[in-house]
Image (cartoon, rainbow over all chains, first blue to last red; front, top):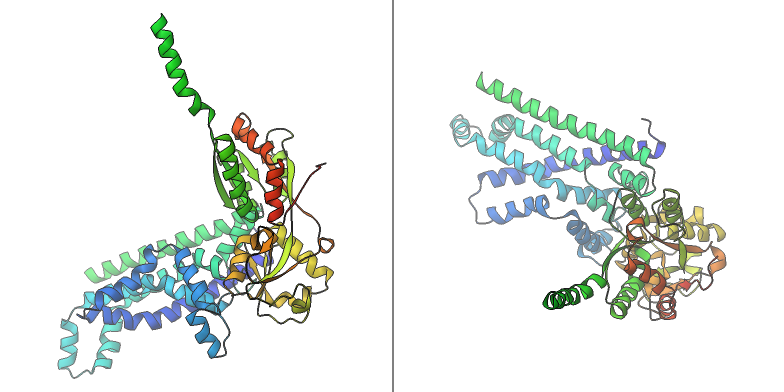
Length: 228
Length: 254
C-alpha cells in the first residue's frame, strides 16, 4: 500500500480539518452542554433538538441548505461578504463551519451527559467552601466531566474525518483546500482506480477501528478506576 | 375439452398484454437527463413499455454495472466506459454505438454576465469558475481543452471549483456560488433557447468531440423492450429532441 502525493495531501487536509473542528467544537460545545445540563428553561427541548438534528438529517439536506445560505444570495453569504470575507463554499473555512454543525451532537452530548452525572452535591459543597461560579466550573465541573470531554473529542474528530456528503456538496474538490480523504476515495472509484481506492479505504477502516477501540478501552479503564 | 380450451384462451388473453409490456431499467449519464426524460415518455406512449431511469455519473454506473447492477441499457457520457464494458464482456456483442455528440457552453446564472464571447473569461472578472472534474467527466476534459486553446489554464486555475459530474457543476453555477462555469449545453437549453442567465456556446473547434456511447448490457440482451428503445433512439423525432437540447445527433455512425 503506497499513497500518491494527492492522497497524502488529502490525508493531511483531513487531519487539519478534523483538528480545527474538534477544537472549535470544544469551545462552542462546552457552554451549550453546560447550559443544557443545568437549565430547566422551556428552550431546553428545542435547543437540544437542534443540536441533535445532524444525527438524523441526511447530509444532502444540510449541504443543500449550506450551499444556498453561504452562497452570494444567501443570508450568511451576504453577511460574510459585508465583512469582506467573500463567500464560504469551496473554502477550507466553509468546510470547517459545515463540519461544526455536522459534528456538534457528537461533542455536545457526551459532555452534557458527563456534566449531568456530576449532580448538585459537589457544586453545593464547593459553594459552601466559598468557590465562585467560575471557580466551581473550572475546578469542580471540568475535572469531574473529563471522561465526557475525552469521549467528545474522539467522537468529534472521528466523525469529521468520516464526513462526505456535505463536503461533496459545498467543497468543489479543490486539492489541498477541500479535497478530503472521503472525496479522494470517491474520485478514485469514479475514475476506475480501484487499487488506490483500496489503499485509502483500508487506511480509513484501520483508523476508524483503532479510534473506537481506544475509546472503549478508555471507558472501561475509567469505570474500573471509579470502582476502586 | 371445449371449456378447457376456452379457459386457456381466457387466461392467455389475460396474460399476453402484461407479458408484452415490459419494464426496463436504464442508466443515464447526468448530462443527458433532460432529453432522456422526454425520450422515455415518448417511448412509453408509443410502445406501452415502462422505462425506469437512473441518473448519475458514468464512472459510478460503470463500477455498479461491473458489480451486477440490474440495468439493461447504459447511456454513457463518453466512449471510454462503454468501451471498457465491451472489453469486460458485459455488453451484448456489437451493441455499442454513438447516440449523440455533446456540446459545451460557458454559462452564468446572471443575465448579461457572459456576452457570447471570451471577454469575461479573459479579463478574469468572476469569483469562481466551475468545471466538471476532468478526471471523471468528459465535459471536464473538454473544458480543460478549451482553456488550453485559449491559453487560460494558468490564469484561471486558482479560481477553479470542480463538480463531481456535470450536474453538480451546473448546481454550483445556478446557485451563484460560482459566477461562471463550463456546463453541458443540454442543461441550459430548452426547445433550442437559453432558459436563464447568459452564455457562450463554445465553438466545436476548441475541443475534441464529446461522443457519447450507449450499450445494451447483458441483462438486456433478451429483452425486446430494451432492443426497441435502442432502435427508437435513432428515430427522427428523437433526434429532434436531442437537437433542441443542443446535442448533435449522429446521423451516420462509423
